[in-house]
Amino acid sequence: MTNQREFVHRFVDNSEEGTLSIDVLPDAPAEIEFKVESNGNIWISASRAGWLHLARVVAELGLASYEPGYHFHVDRQFRPSSGAGPEVTFEIAD
Image (cartoon, rainbow, N blue to C red; front, side, top):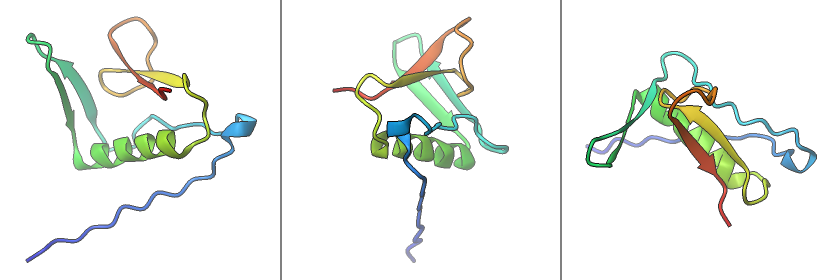
């Protein structure tokens, strides 16, 4: 038996006018956490809703018209970072 699932995400890209806002705040029950292990490995743990939220954010980064260098920071629980502690940065590279 094969399970088939479909993931479709649509959004309006007005980034050229600066109006695209990537919503990084996951809705409940989405949970995402980043851990850096002592050996330097990065561990990403997420609930199923968290993985879907992360997929939406990544899709918007890849499809939006933002210029290379656009970036944002989140903390280890994937909330907007205050800059007070460790953070994860997502950036559109050249």
